[in-house]
Length: 492
Image 1 (cartoon, rainbow, N blue to C red):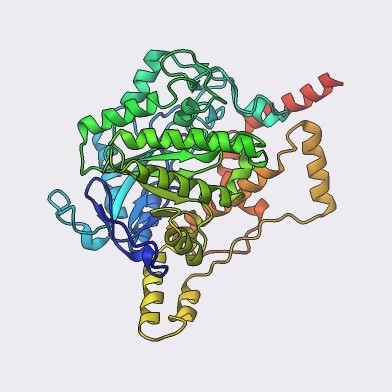
Image 2 (cartoon, helix red, strand yellow):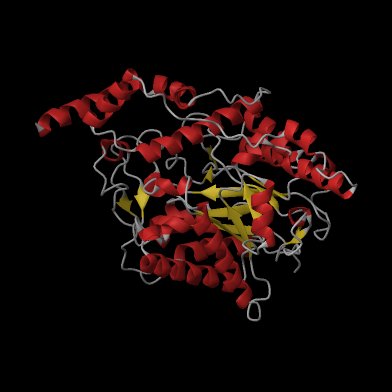
């Protein structure tokens, strides 16, 4: 297996990378999975907006392109507009997902997919599969109000929080039976996948002792990876190499609240996570392990402490390589989070923090980022000291959206009301939500051929993203507000 020479600090991101399966990526740059919010309400198949958006990414020269998380359960959605693998895969579903895969693939690679030479570099098209578990909210998650979500144990998300958002928006889950677990294993079989075992979703819930207190063969204390290994094994039985299989893990599913400020707790969490990564490497089934972070109970991971990710990724990579003698086809490490400039991800590669770089939000700002980098480096090689950076800068700005709220009497009054209702304080989660909404709206605009609008503020993008849903569930929302007022008066 070969990877880029990480100690050549320049252009390492653009050199071919060979996966354990034998598939060769043209470079180490991965268009990471993001939540798109473009399917039909309550989940659906890929549509014209998806095709247009991914067609743009397909022209960018990426080493790998991942879909947004595709749910394997129609009644366990995240925010209501997820792509879904239907229970019965109809001809319409096959056509939709085939069209999506075609849109993700560069035009030069459209032909002869069945008999292609795996040793020839080409953009790899990967579908990310997910099950939201207890993080699936009421109504938008695809369930009626009295139908609880599945989870490893009957522990409500945000059970230690005082906000009514958690109490009203997320029901107490039902602990899954062994038969329920068997059903989930069956639902995860699909072609070309990364298993989403992070960000607090169902597979992550089984791994984490925060959410899994089972005392059977699936308990986090004794067998945290049992469900994940069953699913990976079931996929490999049907789809052996050179089919690519990845797993996404999250740092925050190991690091509890406050642990990042407690050296001993952080060290214990890191050692546990590294042990899991080494176990996965020993399965000899996985091509790459993506390391990310953040869940709804720990939203600060979405925007901070990228240094922890880098340290952990480097140690994970070292631990995997240390097992090379016993597992020669060891998985590569894919680091996702905070990769917002070429300097950052080139440094991550050259310092040996990672083998692959996952780029999410920057891929929205620059869908053709790999091609722009190649143009930049080619210019420098030709003697242009700045590598044509002015031209590149015109095509790609690293400008991030400004989503702060004005300190006006109206805003202060609104915050006071939300605090009185018990909806706040959730300042970090709201801030992360505004950033997610900005990129969701920008992806939607991009799919329709509109440009990036940096003037969109936080309130505007949240309203733009959610107005259709608010119209659909306005009566229920009114009832929820009434419950908030009633509960508040009862406390008096």
